[in-house]
Amino acid sequence: MIRVGLVAGLLVAAAWPLSEALRRPMDARARAGAPGQIADLPGGRTHLIWQGPPEGPVAVVLHGLTTGSYILDGVAAGLAGRGYRVLRYDLYGRGYSDRPRGRQDRAFFLRQLEAVLDSQRLGGELTLVGYSMGGAILTAFAADHPARVRRLVLLAPAGLGQTPPGLADLVARLPGLGDWVMAVIGGGVLRRMTQRVGRARGLPAGLIAAQIAETRFRGFLPAVLSSLRHVLARDLAAEHRALAETGVPVLAIWAGRDEAISAQARDRLAVLNPAAGHLLLPEASHALPVTHVSEIVAAIPPAGS
Image (tube, rainbow, N blue to C red):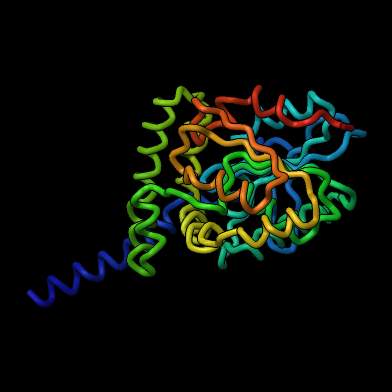
């Protein structure tokens, strides 16, 4: 019985690294046909996409926790149509970007963002549009570099209160066990949730398939888990106060039926930065950059204004 228990224990323990090893690597073959370009940055290869008129003012549009930049296709196209030169990139661990190890905390993502800007020689004022976790990252950047920011637009932003699903909250709080659960069953849970929620919201089949595909690549699940434990565990009250003091224009667009962002986040931002503008889309869910593209694009001032 002891020997059987030992073998069973070893098999359970091996399931964690084995599950990750069996997933596809993000390599040249996986990147074949990727739109845009791949930039070799100090932290790893990063997938970039440019859209819009070359002479337009630059807008950096950044995605969230569990997708690549493709979730913002509609918003990026809309802004390009309004005269912006739009830059999107995939955060490490997502899309076509590399999967470097390490804590995915505030500093981790700001290093990637600053490396992207340096690689593209972007030193002037920027319009920043961040969705969910992307909103938290761009808020931190704007607080650190207010002189480089023309406007900050936040789409259902993280950083002022999240309401993660039960599994996400569980794995984030349990080191070791949480890593095992995420590696062994996290992919399946995310795939089922993506299918269920995507169909309920009427999201495009291609978007659902792309998000499901993310879970089959090596490094994606550890990246999501590390982000939950680090950058998404950070409260950004200090950053929003700093933005209020420096006068950076802020517009926050909220979803009335958001299942991922706390309903109190909007009230907190109003207190922290009384000058910030707010737009509530009452019928929108957390998928608002897919389902409410026209309202989002119309709320952002056109290029040159």
